[in-house]
Length: 209
Image 1: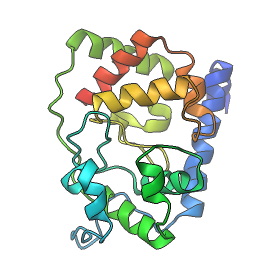
Image 2 (image 1 turned 90 degrees about the vertical axis):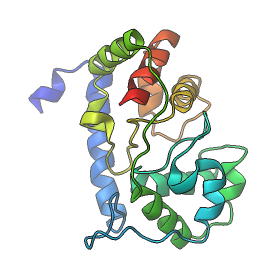
Image 3 (image 1 turned 30 degrees about the vertical axis):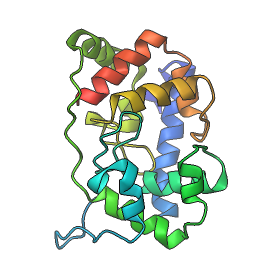
Image 4 (image 1 turned 45 degrees about the vertical axis):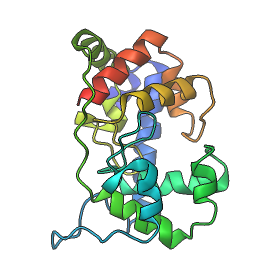
């Protein structure tokens, strides 16, 4: 506790919020996993996955600039986002109607399937200097406190390592402008400390991981 109290007020609050999110996710959704079954066999693609892959790519390997890669994403995060799209806590002209009629079982199946896929290898070529500045900003902002080392994510906190550059750029800008608010205020608070240049540098850094 002494360590947390040494943080600036914003970061101390984020530390507590991230810890609560991790504990809460374990309690609410113990059946969700972000890896294949113990026998090593990845789950078969559920029927609705075909529709998802029309935009997100085969196995969630997105080839579209502002369409996020789903492969290897945290299952709990994917499940939560589908629920948020369905409930209107998050809005997108394509995803909101897609999630509207999904059942809870279908959401869990889709989340488990894409989480079990191998994370995509980015073709994006980051600017080395911008990526360096992005790493420095992420260290300063203590991003890995929530997203973990390597930005692999945990529970309901997303994996952002190797995510599409344009998608990261847009999400950070949307959090800052409060166009996206389904984050309990954590990312909104962080993004408010970022300049446009910081956001671009972070996107270069994360896309290159």
